[in-house]
Amino acid sequence: MKIRFLLVPVGLAISFVVVTFAQQPNTPDPQLREALATLFKKMDDGFVNSDAPALAALYTDDAVHVTFNRPPIYGREAIQKHFEGDFKGLKLHFSHYVSKPEEHSPHVIGTAGNELWGTGEFDQTFQFENANPMRQKGHFLCVLVRDGDALKIKVDTFNFSGPAVPAETK
Image 1 (cartoon, rainbow, N blue to C red):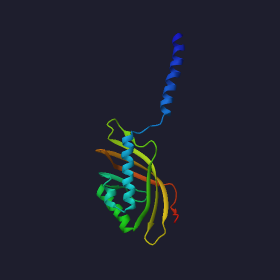
Image 2 (spheres, helix red, strand yellow):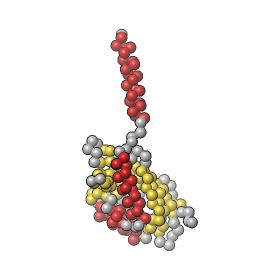
Image 3 (cartoon, rainbow, N blue to C red):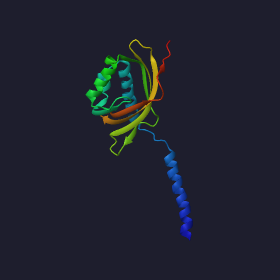
Image 4 (tube, helix red, strand yellow):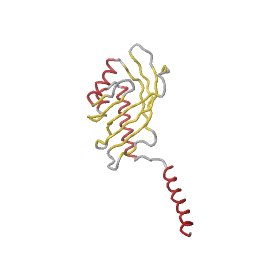
């Protein structure tokens, strides 16, 4: 009988600890967060500069880029050709591209700490040749791997949070 009375407070205490830890945010490692911010800055610059080789360099050799309107693109070389096709073939130019990781990214996968995943949002202003500038926002998900102190993209995908709208001009 006394054991039952002891089990109730112990059970409540364990429940309180589990709920408390479950509600605490996943705070990413500051060095990983900085590496992610550096990766996204390089990506933003690559889009604004229409630099397909610089963008492709952010991916692993065996990366997969999943787009919204094409089959997945496999491998760094194919990803570079994809971006070259957008910039040269489609005559697509970005005048503004900003990626922002969500506050809890990146998240470590497994115990080795060499693989991570991250989510975030982007805001882009783009223009096709002889067309008006358009603005579009969206969200992304990426799987990353460590490459020394830097991160590289192993898999990425994105979606748009709405249709492209005419960009404000100054």
